[in-house]
Image 1 (cartoon, rainbow, N blue to C red):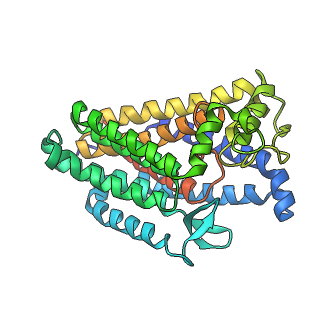
Image 2 (cartoon, one colour):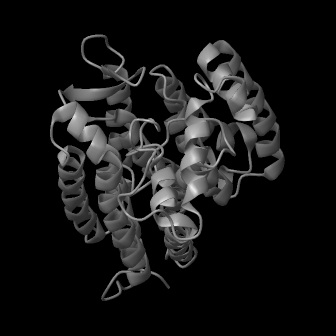
Amino acid sequence: MGKARSAPDIWIIVPTLLLLTIGVIMVYSASAVLALREFGDSFYYLKRQLLFAVLGIVAMFFTMNVDYPIWKKYAKVALLVCFGMLVIVLIPGIGVVRGGARSWLGIGAFGIQPSEFMKIGMILFLSKMLSDQQSQITQFTKGLLPPLGIMGLAFGFIMLQPDLGTGVVLVGASLLIIFTSGARILHLSYLAMVGVAGFVGLIIAAPYRLQRITAFLDPWKDPLGAGYQSIQSLYAIGPGGLVGLGLGMSRQKYSYLPEPQTDFIFSIISEELGFIGGSLVLLLFTILVWRGMRAAITAPDSFASLIAVGIIGMIAVQVIINIGVVIGMFPVTGITLPLISAGGSSLTLMLTSIGILLNISRYSR
């Protein structure tokens, strides 16, 4: 490990804090009407977002100052704890059901999502495993199957909740780590075909997923049912035009668009701030991903490089899917927009992960 720089990459810190600030403002704008109706307090979601944003920033600055090699020491323990939480959350009476998925542990309004912990736990473990055994990754049985098996097991537990969106993000980030570590494209191509077949099976096995696919292809076929969210999202984006209707002036947040402060917050951004506001958000994510990949390329060792790839992959996959859903390119999956959507454990853990990335950036060659 090389000598640490005096400061982490400012071009990771700045877009992160700007996106977080935009998120706090837009969570209030998108949720005030809903919060007033449900809780009698228009600031309800804003106060929660500020709380978790502060906790996340504290966690980010903590992990930014913890030398990344320590995560190699605790990667296996972290993964086992994450698997334990995934098992516990499935137990009736312990796991809390929200949005049709038993994916929460907690009491009342406060809770954690074990699947969010698993995303970073899997990134750390696979980075350790593949950096230690990098010479074997080109071998299908000894090198490729073990990490795929662990990833598949985690995906299986997440699907038992069920939470397809989080599962897809975990698989996407994991495959990027495996590919970057040197896995053969031929092997991954064969597995991709198996994965597509399995994905089709998951869709067929659950009628609501099939409804989302058909609604994605033609939302007007069921405008008040499966296609409702997609249509209302486009109704929000369209009137926004170039400069938007103005901050706080959204019409769709008045009980037309479901989940305006979480899954569909980009719709409200586009409606209120227009094409310019939406483009600014995408530019900030692009800068964050670019500098994260730069940290991966210039990292002093393969362990640090793979962690950086995994964290940036997790962010990029989540952003692509969320915005793809909002603009009608993908079926509705229930994935939040990183750093912007209202969230608890998801926001805190995202900032914690970026802190690890910032520490790696301090050791760039």
